[in-house]
Image 1 (cartoon, rainbow, N blue to C red):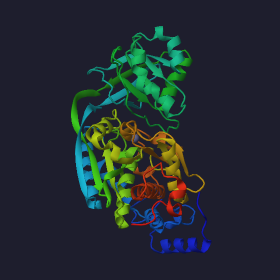
Image 2: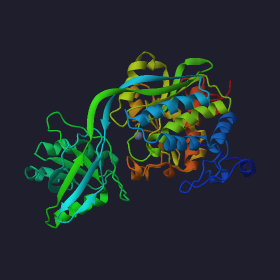
Image 3: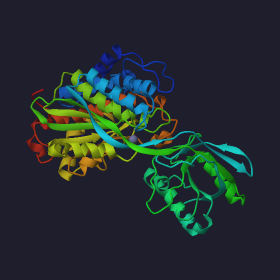
Image 4: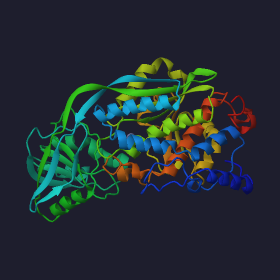
Length: 493
Ligand SMILES: [Zn+2]
């Protein structure tokens, strides 16, 4: 997908980069925020494409410490950002200030009606046959225990099938689902639908094994839903370890009893905001290339991977264009969505507010898979556009040697609303091996983000944004052979 250049050129680039860069700390023990990312930590150098402007943009992004500095600032000084919370208000102000400081032409907010849920104090404790505390987190949007402490026997099941087979035992019990991790999409169904499923059979509360494949003793929260035709019972997640212990006690024929107290409460809906910033296009300002992440988060940890990373990646990618004195033909728009975690009303509100200009949205990209080693992009669009983006993005493959792909696939929750209306959608993709280890847990903190990976992801998003915003041709229909030199960004910078 790309040509190799002489090693001498590569060596020169590396030497120049090394000469100008401080040594970056490792993510685990980073004492300070680095000014730059050490070139020694960047991936094995692969020669530039035949587009010097694109290459300069990518090279600059690979050694820029801005995104890492901003992510540390967001995590440490704003903190977690539950929709409707004071933290989210701080985050909205941080986002606006950051876009203005980065030099965006126009920055504004758009109101979004959002659910308002608070966690309050909560605890769970096994009281028979032995006493021990259970580390737990209420599910988002769960009701609480109404000022009381529930105490009931645990009915532990492995999965839906086992519950259905034993459903007549659920009356008056706290049902615990202890399913194996079978990937997020399948396993998360217990979190979303578990409470109403067991409530229909008389259960008084629902617990689940946290939705993760790896645990070091942290429970994982996330949104649940109540069905209209079932009683609303409280629901919480236990750690993998505690869920396993209770499950094994039941297997031994013991009848563990658990106390559960949750102040979780649903309040009247409130108003939050999407934050939007434009870098105005120099030739076709009405045409928009949208890049995004979601500013809201859960209320544990500091939510660096979900989705502090996506927020700073979109911000830093757009800023990198300005840093390189690039003002592409089309408008580059950064959207920091609200309320992704609580149902997606930020994405719906963007659709409602911009329906009149959807046909001017050339592409929408979302980064909401954390910042690990880059893997490329998944594209939700017709096959001509997917093929076209694959070809255009080929010079970016040097950011992720041996792993780069552009493939048909899902794009993102927030942009999904406009993608379903026909806007080509792009999902920023990274190595997903460890994302769900920390996702929605207290372990999702700044230390989990690698500064080199973050810079590589900025380079990938900045590169694709530039290629799409700058190309004279529309996406998709143009045959490959008609574009000059195989490089869509030739001319007119
Ligand atoms: Zn997310």
